[in-house]
Length: 146
Image (tube, rainbow, N blue to C red; front, side, top):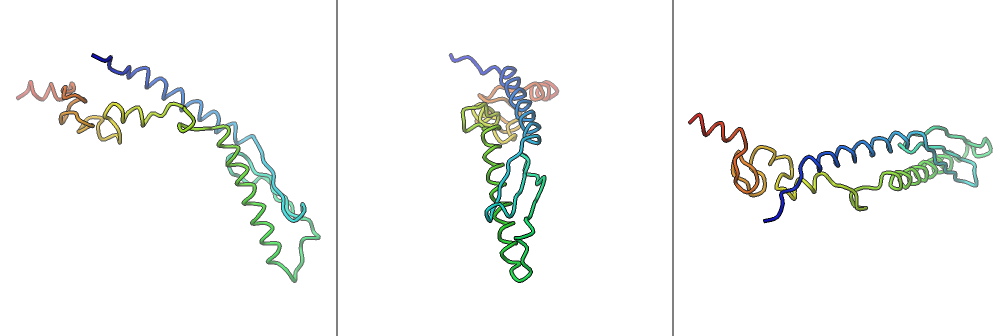
């Protein structure tokens, strides 16, 4: 008979993964990407958490007769900075798709996915019980009271 999964170990792994992810997100706030358009006439510096830190517009790019061009340059620079910051996030944070621990997948493999099984009708378990039909402590107490 296969060994039941070690829930304590899985919980510890999930907590460690969340702590690492929070640390990485904090570090992203300190990292910066820069983007420019129009041959450097519009420059943007953005942090790894998608906050614009600075926007510099070359005075030569300001043409009162062609405001739309300046608007397009700014939009293009912002979008490029966002793309670079998202790439930075992806490289720092990774994710479950890159082989990391995915707590929701682990819960689903136990029949506890979607949080509905955490005390109710989890994948294949009895009502008020655990997967496999074993009643949980609350269900056993309720049965004793009857």
